[in-house]
Image 1 (cartoon, rainbow, N blue to C red):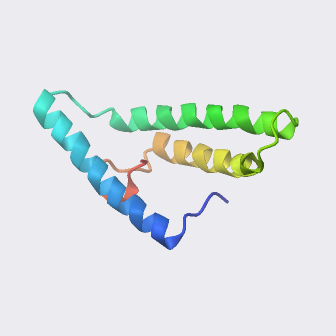
Image 2 (spheres, helix red, strand yellow; image 1 turned 180 degrees about the vertical axis):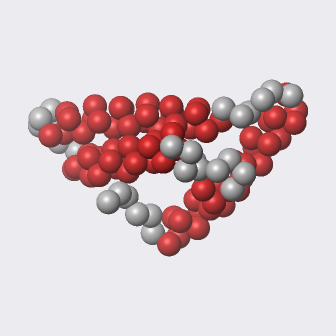
Length: 102
């Protein structure tokens, strides 16, 4: 079980993924750099974001911060962890915009 976006959010994510595919492709063309490791970068970025959210969430659980918006972070951390696992297991084909991790 993970965070499930609304239909509108899912549509926006699809558009964002297509845009990001274009950005990566244009970057590779203009710089000549190999972007074959781009999924690793997204997996690592997902991990870093997950760590930040975990730090905020534990502070919330311990009562060190009272902002009620932080109460949902545990679920979001789980979703990011699942996304990271999917990425590292090769579940995101870099040629398929709909499965990109961003």
